[in-house]
Length: 194
Image 1: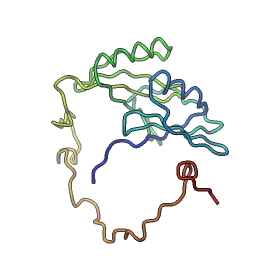
Image 2: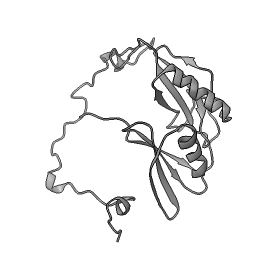
Image 3: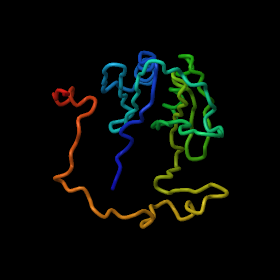
C-alpha cells in the first residue's frame, strides 16, 4: 500500500469569508471545490497538486484561543499544528514578510536542524507552521532519530514492521464494493439525492 499525500485536512470555521481571504488571497492556495447545504459549507484549498486543506463552516464556531505550537497540554487533546512545506528559504522569508504585513505576526525563522520554520495562526486561531528543508538534510532519504530517549518501537527503525497487526482474513470481494452517495455526489456526478 502506498499513500500519495494528504488528500485533505478537515478543519472548522465560523467565518468562511475570512478563511478564504487568508488561505486563498494571502497564502495563494486555490479554492478548488466547494460543497454546501442547509447549515454547512465545506470548501477545499489546494496545498499542492495532490494535497488540500478543507474547512467546514458551521454557525456558532468561534476561533480558538492561541496555544503556543508544541507547548505541552494535559487532558483530552487531538491537534497541535499543521506544517506546510515550502520549496526554498527565500519563499519562507517572503511568506514571513507577507504574514507580517497582513498583521498575522509570524514568529522568527526557527532552525530545527533539518528544517527551518515560521509559526503563525490563521483567522480561526488554527496554529500553522511553514517549513523548508535545510540544504543537504533529507530525512526522507536518510531517516534520523535524534531523540535522546527514544521509545523501544522507535529503536526498531524507520521501516514498517510486519506482523504487528492481524492479517486480513477475508478481503471485500469486488462484487460487494458499494460506494454510497455523500455530500457533493449530486453536484459532481449529476445524481439527485432521494
